[in-house]
Length: 261
Image (cartoon, rainbow, N blue to C red; front, side, top):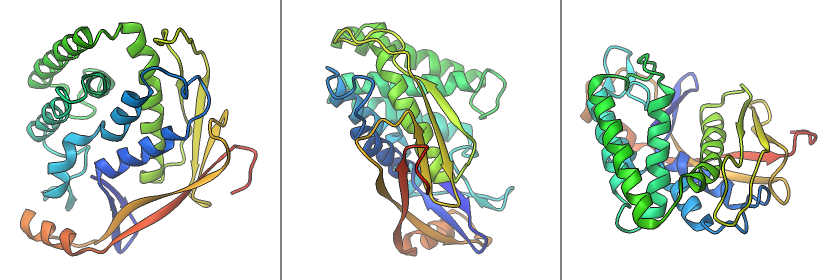
């Protein structure tokens, strides 16, 4: 799960809810040839479900005694994280193999992001072995679904950017981010080349996108809970407090960069 320190409370957003917001954002995308893309449905499904393996982990959170806070997606012990990716990569393999290819691509991108330096705690021998298995599984599903490598390369930047945008919002991070869109060639022959940029402004709760890919400025609501910031006795104590926490929603406005917040 994603934690944001609000002083007396942590604001908690589950990984699946973060991914759902990413999918909602991408569903309104009108540029880069996305509306006419042959694999748009699989792309939107994969974006909504790219963190589906975290369902079970977020439903039964664990307490990080060393840090004095709940485990989040960075600090969850490596064996549990590996299980998250195994589970999440297989959940839709039979039902939606095209989407599963993109979910696996996301998992492999996360592995590569660690750069082999342990920055995420995933770059150990067991994770490298898992990454090899995930790569084989992706190739197997892509071959069965007749999805070429350049189609995957053309589709994945959309998921990657929507994921980055949602994470910036859920973490309230103001650092700009960007993704080169349209690498490779899509099934419909479209090629890209746009660099899509984003920046979240916490003071106005606004996500600015440049170039602006939606039909107009719009407001989203992301589910969250507030968890009292205290020391919990263990996983059961933490889980009980989170289960008792009232659900709410926070608002985020998505707008072109020239519009005020």
